[in-house]
Image 1 (cartoon, rainbow, N blue to C red):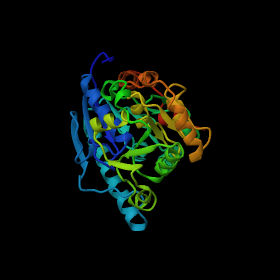
Image 2: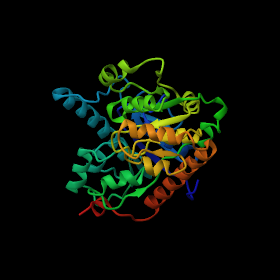
Image 3: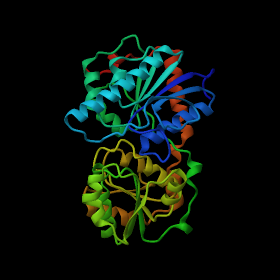
Amino acid sequence: MLLAQPLNIAVMAHLHHPIASPFPGGLEMHTALLAEELSARGHTVTLFAKGGSRTSARLMSVLDAGFSFTRYPEGPAREAQTRLLDEAQNRTLQLINEGTFDVVINNSLSALPHLTPPAHPMLTILHTPPLPRVTAALDAQTHNRQSAHRIVSVSAANARQWRHHLRDIDVVHNGIRLEEWGTDAAADRHPSVAVWAGRITPEKGLHVAIEAAALAGMRIRFAGPISDQDYFNRTIAPLLSESVEHVGHLDHSQLAAFLGSGTVFIASPLWAEPFGLTTVEAMACGTPVAALPCGAMGEIINDRGGVVAAGFSAADLARAVIQSRTLDNRQVRASAARFSVEAMMTRYEQHLGDLVGSGVLDDADMVAS
């Protein structure tokens, strides 16, 4: 622990899914890791999350585990879901205000901590491109000017997306426990097999990865939850074959072995990917990455962890797949070292210490003019 004394920390999770393995995505894994690591460093941590979450920190369930998040509800269903999530986050803020916390970490994706900030210093972590309800809250400048608040982003690419709304954003890259992702496993790699992992949704571009693998003359195996059943049924299921295999939604240890089994990892985001945690996990396994040039891909991969495609087509990605196969697995793994959990936690503790121990810019000062 870098701080002179341990802190009493509230962590606000988003409430779409429980914070539990197998994780639906990188945000859930980040939230779990953050709570675990802060606890391991001697802090008292309370995680406010959906029921069914699992953590070594103190858990406060603010939404029933039976709630099922719908990605694209319409009409009354959308209003009902938004109302339910808002009520749960309002309960979270009320419980935090009633508590004796030193600082709050906001991982919630909600606009409410900006509209009605907690009575404690707060660190907000931006895990997504700008969200309309959050930016509306920021642009309205309806913040509590007495509330110490810092905002950081998980990548410089994602920070740039928010610059229109926020003037002062630091960058703290996501980190992983590198030792959990093995060493160079070249002897166990399947030749001519590409791997892919993530939420199976249109914006993750699995269909492009499948086409790119075929153009590169490779089989592809993919892992992850089917988060958009219609997309899977219409676009992915017809492509399944001996050369295109879904291995299911894997837990942490299974995913490490899976990522280390491929000759190349394909990252195919069709949106402004804020970070791409599986990209770093693959690199930590020594598996080179071939990626579309979206969001933070170039920032994360650089020139040692893989190859970023020159364009956005499947043919461009296929060329990156072929080029990435020539990279040295040990150098690929070494390139992931800058994304250690230790480096991430050191930066977060610095921010938390500054918030608790000294004055910082308030929300209104941070809003871009």
